[in-house]
Image (cartoon, rainbow, N blue to C red; front, side, top):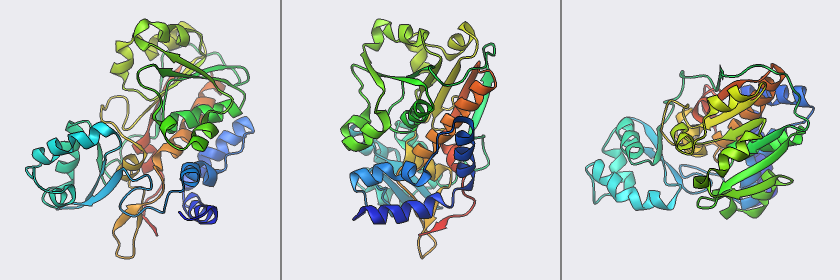
Amino acid sequence: MKNAALVADWAATVAGRLGPLTAVADAFTAFTGVPVDLAATLFQRAESAGFRTPARTSAGGSCRLLATADGWAAVNLARPDDHATLPALLGLLGTPQAALETAARRTTAAELAYAAQKLDIAAAVLGSARGGRAPVSAERHGQPGPRGLAGLRVVDLSALWAGPLCARLLGLAGARIVKVESTTRPDGARFGHPDFYRRLHEGHENLVLDFSSGALAEVIADADVVVEASRPRALRRLGVRAEEFLAARPGRVWVSITGYGRDDDRIAFGDDAAVAGGLTGQDRHGDPVFLGDALADPLTGVYAAHAAVRSLRQGGGELLSVSMAACAAAQQKAPIAC
């Protein structure tokens, strides 16, 4: 995007069409007194980084909407390892010498997404998450103990956007936020635009730990709320179990953000999760285009913060599973013309 005014116009157009998200944001404000400016929340990274309006390449440049033999799919080469794995993906598709766009046209959307996911590349069939799970599901594993947010210790183990935004909103509502990073895997958002990272983490404490040392379990032991975006098996390998955390003290809350739910190991990032939810725009030919910048990330952060506050008000003791694709799927029944 060329200037802040263009970002503002784009943001207002998209944010104004997301009725379910608006209701969730308003409920968060009713609970906490903290206003949520959805246009700013959804597009703050695009504004900071000067991203252009996306089409079939995402605003951040890593995700592509690809026409297939029977529809559309998104493939997100978000990490350096994903680019290194691309030849293996083309090999699985039976087109080792072809460009990804060419390979996509020769296969189905489901086959393309499955092959990418098999290699741990984020990918999704357009609209595949519609009609599935709820955006947030709750399981009770601890005793209730109603508490307000003021002074609560929130340990944020997440990275990038959705989880940190959840923690940011909880911090604005009075919680004390402690961001925890691994010595070997720092938050990837640190390598993006510094203003975006600062807005999400301003005023938060920061701890950098060797997760293999057992120190992570000690930090979590003092928390009232945990926010994380990891596969459950990855945390279990570190000796961290949400169910045990919740059972150890009344009123605690555990927020687990994943692409498709805790029982689904597929990875996801904001752009491909939005595509899975069918949250796309539509060009003049009726073909899908990306609607925003990694849109499933910020809207999931709002959903997660609201769910945490609601759980605390009702006594806590809950494991909250927040699905990015399901949050996107809850928004839009028809594409927005762009």
